[in-house]
Amino acid sequence: MMHKYKALGVALAAVLGLSAIAAQVASANPLTVNEGGSGTTFYTGDQETTWIFETPEGTSQCPTTSIKAATAGASVTETSYEATYSNCSGLGFVTMHWNQSNCTYTFTTPTKIKTGEVTWSASNIHIVCAAGKFIEYTPTFLGTSACTRFIGSQTPKGGHIIGRNAGGPGPNEKDVTLEITLEGLQYTSTGGACGSAGAHSDLKWTGNSTVRAYSNGGHTTQRGIAFS
Image (cartoon, rainbow, N blue to C red; front, side, top):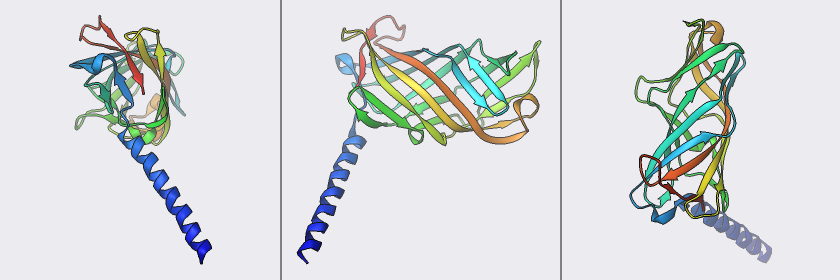
């Protein structure tokens, strides 16, 4: 009988330990803004690698992309980014045009791995569009549209985003990087070069970006940020 009580005690201690860890993760403020984050903090993001959007029918590559966002306060648990893609190509030879339709990428509280590095699982990442709106990308050849894909509000089925501290040594030189690998993104296609018409869930998105923060909307006065 004593062995049973000991086993129960060990199991209870393990459960309580796991609960404490879960509580720490849930209450974590993953991104800390320098200078107390007074007022609004404005973010810009510049790519470090080409962003690639891949499906079985072909790949869209965007060598020029940028993201922006804004938050309030010193501790940030959720951020919504707007993205702009430029100079994109697809299927090896056509121009790929993107229309974001004001859709955003929202990151909620990530799973904290260690100081200076966090991971958002697929369930922590959301594409958010207004009702009836979609991210649209269209390959064109000689100015003529070949087809269109529509990406609506959703949570990816797989993948993750890893955030790491980066930047210079000064308190206002600190920035962060985002390493993106998302899979199972859903979209609908009009057919043709975009693949069979209808719904699909096989879009993969990869790419890396560096995010910097500023205390003004003109992005001239940098403010340090870090995963804590």
